[in-house]
Length: 296
Image: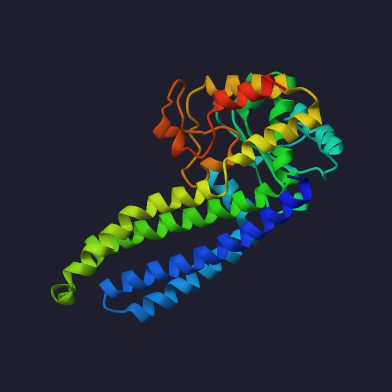
């Protein structure tokens, strides 16, 4: 797959994800409205929330993701090596210099976000900058710049915001079901069928959110690994970095909605692997990625 076809595919995928989200979210609210005896009002509410979430995720996904992860701007003075390494690799990749942020966390990890190369952000944990050597850091940053160049960041950032919206609304509806409407006499007149359907929908919502994340394709991590190596010409740098990242405990400042953004699964513990875990993981097995890199 050429870079240009990958960019076009990601742009098309972004539009489709936003439209699917609006349709599913509105339908979800319509079913909830049936339970609360006001389907029309809930359908309109669902359309409004999903439309604003989709537009907001396009223009402000980077700011939302950075706020969610607790990231702060990385000054050139404080993180000089991080700045100069990124600057050099951005020039090599033919990209504008992205904004740099850091997360105060001892566990090494990194991600890129934004809607296009002109609005890109590369974020690394302080653990990554302190515990990895320069060639490792170059491997990680080149991987993230590959996501920027191919517009993977557009799809990933929008999915992070939309999945987060879905989780917040589901939590609110669950609370409303159990507590907010307990004094409503109309509860007695509600069909048991819709009550059961409502509970089922709330249970499967986290599964749907995970499937949305998986829908953006774990294949992009392999492509970013390969593209990153084309920038540095040093596959061992990234392989070594992934090996070290996998040896540390899970990241503290991550959430399920942003997990797919990171270079490595921020929740997976060392040695934790099975076919079921890998099936529903937002990342391909790190051992497989290292093996492919070392065969280059």
